[in-house]
Length: 125
Image (cartoon, rainbow, N blue to C red; front, side, top):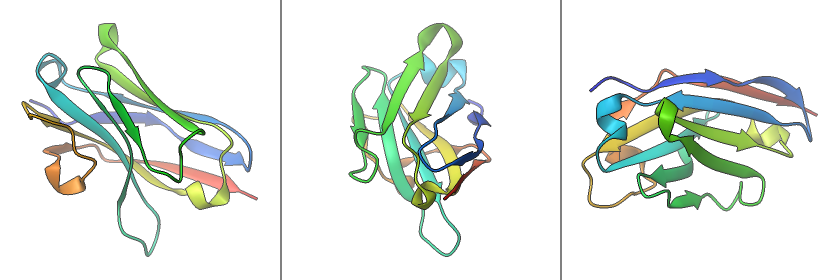
């Protein structure tokens, strides 16, 4: 089915914006799926940031609500995470993950089948 592929990320100052992208395999995109953005900072556990399913239903961690938006482009099999008003505590490696043919979308790392390699996001104060 193919692993997701992230792109984007980078370094910005506090208050800035970044967008990360994730290309899902055609198989995943054309079946019931749950796609999640996760992040992991040094010394911390991996945490769910946002999810989106094939119906377009989204969920967000409380820490990013109102600042981050997950969206998708069906023509490109691509999911985006737009991150605005970034804070130093958002600094982490961001991972795209997907689960295919699932009855519901859970914001849980253990529920994901395929993971991207991650892209670094660094916010300076």
